Image 1 (tube, rainbow, N blue to C red):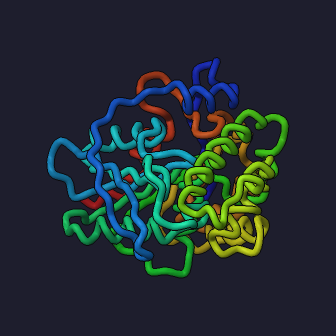
Image 2 (cartoon, one colour):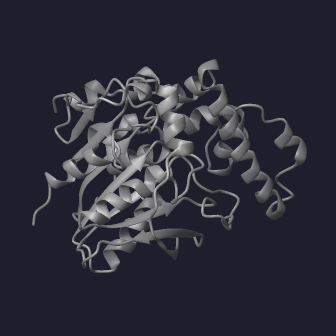
Length: 321
């Protein structure tokens, strides 16, 4: 598929990737009424899903996946949900394990390659027998999960008509390297603090595994992945986790129409996260690389962000009404 030419032109002050990223993550507000549903996962854990609905009964739903240490009330999630609701589509915003305000039941939780939980949510939507069309949109970590899910050796339900992945760290090792650079120090410190706070909560449930000294020794995100993410989820080490979980290697197998938008000034992404070759060799993978946008910061005039507008435009190409 030819690389898409982007039309995104942000207001001047948001051409700076850092400003766009911070504004979108910390300042933007979206009002949306949601109702919570808890479902059981295949391994006897739980997921909290936050639903919002179109004004009239809909046969279409979009599944929304947040990023690292996000949740279903983050504006980059609710902004998309609200726009799709206004355009006749129900939305289910997924809280990954431990991200809904309550710790999950097990020592393991969620990570960048954990696709079975997405599969459980897809099956839950299908089992309701009201949705004939399902879209998926993942942001950052959620985007990596989306792309990996679509490209894995699994049967993708024919109800899934299209997918969108935004600001995707498709090469996890490369993104981890970028996050550890001075330019991203403020973000890395914030992520590490949130992740360690989660582990301190989990320490109450698993005191025999988690010790204060171990937590105090974690100084970087890579060390967190070395100590917890890899070990809790069955990987040899952080390198093995990054290698197995990166979506880049799965892009060639995607058979569902998929839009991937990665801004060229996204400081979280390494060169490998712009899969030009893969997009050119897969008619289902539509790659858009705007000059601006930062990390999930596609601000434009009005309440709707550019990536949200593009998501609506993209799925309408595959609307079979």
